[in-house]
Length: 290
Ligand SMILES: C[S@@+](CC[C@H](N)C(=O)[O-])C[C@H]1O[C@@H](n2cnc3c(N)ncnc32)[C@H](O)[C@@H]1O
Image (cartoon, rainbow, N blue to C red):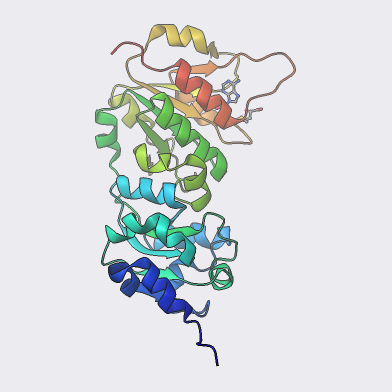
């Protein structure tokens, strides 16, 4: 009889002595040790459960690397054996953290989707930042009013990181920047740009003014000034309010802010997508004096 091929032993041997011994092989999707990864495709469930349980999921080697570089701590790793080599350095740098591996069909049955990027990490959520502390050193901040679309959120963070926005403030009803899709679309920028979830909106507006910020609502209103005219003022501390996808900036906020700013468009167009508008405004209203 030919010898039976021992898959687990082969994977452990290929991973090397230290990492090989740490691997936890999954044989069934009903393993309670992997609850962090269960039902990842159920957006409604995760939106509640992830913040409540103090966790989030990073997906793919690059994003996992960025989360760790930002100082976030992993709870566990979860991947197909063929991805071990690509993450060996990361795994070895976190010796006490479980590494779950299993065949594609078991991983898929746990998460509810095919792991295109092959590797996931369940991470501890970082401690929330204090508004006053974040505002103290910032000169450009973006306020996202009731931003519900995770792709828009991720894109705005990516532009914020690239174009010099010092912090992002999220109104209480905005989506979670650490939700899997937002993390992925941002390419990890949600770990890089400091962000604060506001406790009361528009109740937190006076805190922005008290910290020396002019507050500008981005909206196409009758009193809106052109973005290039406002850019020429080089306002030292500026908070830019971007409106929710459907209705735009709320009337209460439009009444309360210092100015309205618009990106002029060709006739016939109602508005830009909010993430596209954010990229334009972040660049144009960057602080020009050092
Ligand atoms: C899709 S728009 C909201 C809908 C928009 N109020 C309308 O009636 O078509 C979402 C947000 O993107 C920003 N935005 C989009 N186009 C803009 C423009 N041309 N100038 C300034 N802000 C814009 C605003 O902050 C707006 O609230």
